[in-house]
Length: 313
Image (tube, rainbow, N blue to C red):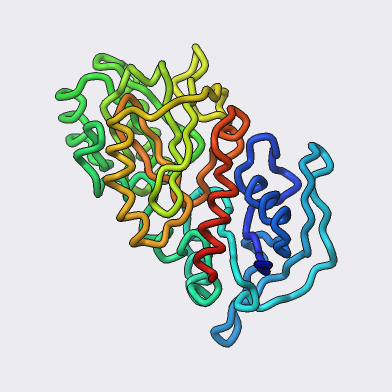
């Protein structure tokens, strides 16, 4: 089965192919004989209720510094593609939301992965609150009194932006931390939306697992261990990838959320779990594919394309 595939992503010349999951998906698609086209979200256009993009034919190679070749650009109606991979990274802002509205016009006749309406309706740190029994104590607010009460109850806390990504602006505050007032003022001045306040889990020192699911089924995992001098385990922030096995609790988490992912057409999802507690459900551009394979785990890119091809059939 040969598919005509477009990828909507960040500028391809800027990616680090050693850890980039989008690049892993493109390599696998090309290996299977699918035709690839590439564009960035700013090249989208809607005219007379039809969605277009200026795309480049794309060839990829697993060679750092020489990882892609682009053909001549052409304006194409997105409905002419079999599959569109929506893979630009957050921030999950109005530009991101607008892109989901554009892609919703062509889905599902053109299969958009992940379903753009569901991506819009399932922000990583909001969607997860549908499963409070799986989460550590968590508060979404910008109200000072609410945060003070939560801190008084739980002691050490973590504060982070509701629509943040990649470990940016994640802070730990101890029970008596004198920086709390200044940090509250900084967040209040910087972020208009509520932010996430969560009980600090000291077990994060042993790692924050990224668990990948395809069509709601567990397919692979990597344990991301933070650097000794950092709270954050994100690999872009210096976290070290380690191989891992799922605990019974982590398998329970996957089994619990799997049906909701399938119902929403969320084909490729990455969840974050610390010491048996679910902290995020990543649906925009989940990463971890290359790290899992490099550690001898399953080929998540191949499993993902098996699922996409099955849906197209």
